Length: 56
Image (cartoon, rainbow, N blue to C red; front, side):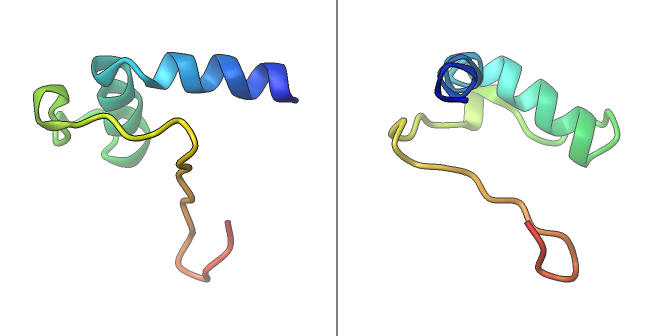
């Protein structure tokens, strides 16, 4: 699992890839999130997405 986590973090460091993935999944392909407006965060940070019921 640690190896997969490393590769996912590496992939998502690319702002354009992150914006594309987020726009595809969250906004159903609409280009809402712009890569040039994103700023990097520490690799130790994480993202937790919850549904309407608070489930991860």
